[in-house]
Amino acid sequence: MDVTRAVNIADLRLQAERYLPRVIFGILDSASEDERVLALNTQRLRAHSLLARILRSAEGVDQSVTLFGKTYASCFGIAPTGFINSMRSDIELMLADAARAANIPMILSGASACAIETIAARAPGQVWSQLYAAQDARINEDMVRRARDAGVAVLVWTVDAAAPPKNDRQARDGIGIPPRPTLRGRLEACTHVGWMRDYLGGAMARFDSWRPYVAADAPPFAAHRLFMAERFGALHWGMLETLRGLWRGPLVVKGVLHPDDARRVADMGADGVIVSNHGGMGLDRAPAAIDMLPGIVAAVGGRVTVMFDGGIRRGSDIVVARCLGARAAFVGRATLYGAAAGGYAGAQRAVDILTDEVGRTMRHIGCRNDGDFNAELVRMP
Image (tube, rainbow, N blue to C red; front, side, top):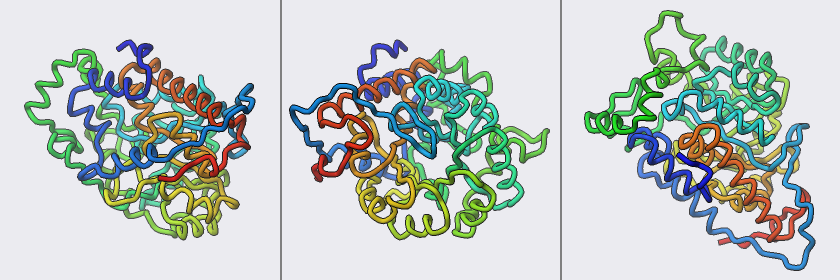
């Protein structure tokens, strides 16, 4: 795919759809049940207008932001997305390379094919580590140790997946653990020659984030099964207290939608929250993440770092979130479309598109730097 021809993220999405088999593109592009939240996140973001301010100097626009003591070149980063090695082997390395080149943060998924040690070494100083806490205390202690030893600065605990997602599209296509695609899906996949060469290398069975916790001779997908068995029973307030005790660096809780929950997270010593509904991969009756952002900023914005993800497809979406109080926004599907379509070059193209659009939007609304974002520039739907 010639990703240099992509004008926007929607173009990269179309290129990813052409490169990937239908069932694999469904992993990237689907969500829970009726996919209501997936659509709602984007729709509600687009419904917010930004007020252009005229005759203001737009020279020297600076979109950088400082998060937990480190300054990044732009106010967005790459969100954690798991089970993505089915799209390209080493796709997480490609995303890490793009984050390093652009000097933006990347949150490595707690359900990654590559180990945290590998990714952190690839992009020193750029990688945050997402944790799906386990019921087994020994696994949690070891994962926190691995993140610390790898030089990770920020630990991100995801809390908004209290039950396994019911993804209707993937269920129909036979995508599970292990995957058992339908005959029609297998035949269609064979027509995607580039992807097929990658797939035959065994990329889908790799799961290095959890591989240390199963036997060396365990069968394929044993680590995946352990992950699914462990992750849901650890979602309780006591786990936050445990993680706060284990991790001395910045601790972020991802998946907060209610102001009262945000207050309790802050009271228990977390350093940040990410307002998120898991990109539509959890509760399909959840509200759009952008609609919950102002209330959480009002509740805890003066105490912890508030960040955002959910539905971002344009740089102007990032600017809306910033104006509503988010210190930074994280994008998942947008950069994945690029990486799936064109590997590192595609991931880099996605980052470049968003960076350019953030800068253009800032100039339109008269924002020169981090201190100029404010809610008065937003018109609510």
